[in-house]
Length: 146
Image 1 (cartoon, rainbow, N blue to C red):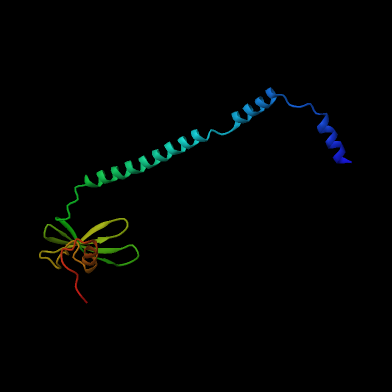
Image 2 (image 1 turned 90 degrees about the horizontal axis):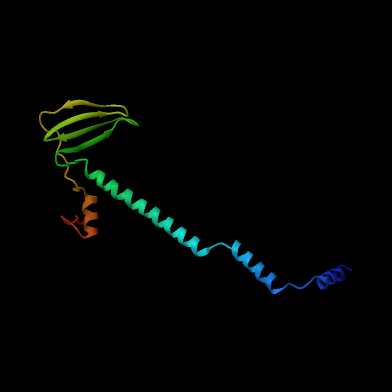
């Protein structure tokens, strides 16, 4: 019975004209998303974010170079942890060695040595550093053969 009623309603409905069909298509197109515009907007946003990241990296590199870090004058000879957040450090400053006590809130001079107590290590003189440099192809000294 329901099928007959639905068929009767379909046959009784007036047919759509060409203008009505075109109007419905234009309304659908007006509400459809602009995919090209969306892709361009997303692409420009991605480029902007990447540019900000590279800009920040460039700025950080420039700022670290301005600190005047000179590892030839000040070297950390040795560091020893005394507790969870306390440690002592032996620092070589211009050939004179200073023992420092370091806590989260202060750094204190514990003792200034007249003559060097320990030799300051050279940068990259460790066994790991030699192996890494050998692997990278820039070996200063060949790694020890075990």
